[in-house]
Image (tube, one colour):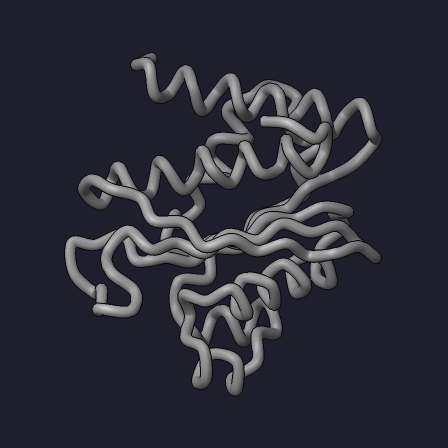
Length: 167
């Protein structure tokens, strides 16, 4: 296991321990990471006790069909927007047994960026059932793989902040 995989494993293990200690299940909605958050979480033995499911919603249609993201939201703000990832979290919580969820949507590159949203722009949201949904815009550097990995790390660190107040 290389250093980065060890980092993902350690973060996933910490998230799992925090969820298990609180009797919570999580779910993930992923666009630019293509299921990598779910893959990282399920590297940890016993993760079925705290990971309910993952949605890979790569297209706008998938975001609408699987998570109920509004077409008006996508048209007005785009797939890579705080509004969209908030709706992805809400849809994930409504369509799973999880009490806590994370959602990511971004531009991993090498193309697809714009002046307003350059390659490396990622939106991440976290939320709990009957709770607030927090969304952040991040900008990561590096190639496609690096942007996606950094997104997974940020998503897991944000879960730890939501669960225990610190990454």
